[in-house]
Image (tube, rainbow, N blue to C red; front, side, top):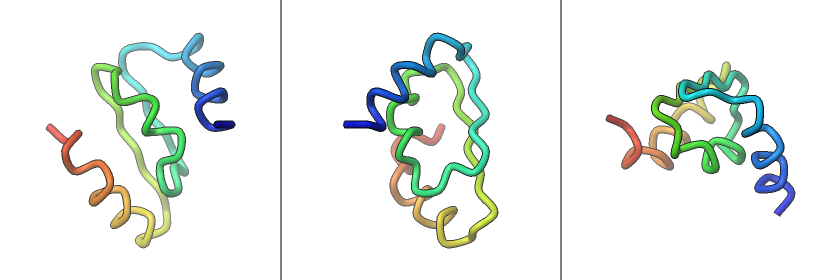
Length: 60
């Protein structure tokens, strides 16, 4: 619930393209997928693998 609220607050400052750095497991990312292009990254390989699985349907 907090992450949904936070994403709502951030939307006011985001454009059509979003770069999210240090995304972790993608708790905010899930609310940004309606943007034209979302790029996410993290330094942790475990999180990167998790993101690939979690958002594989969103990848174009």
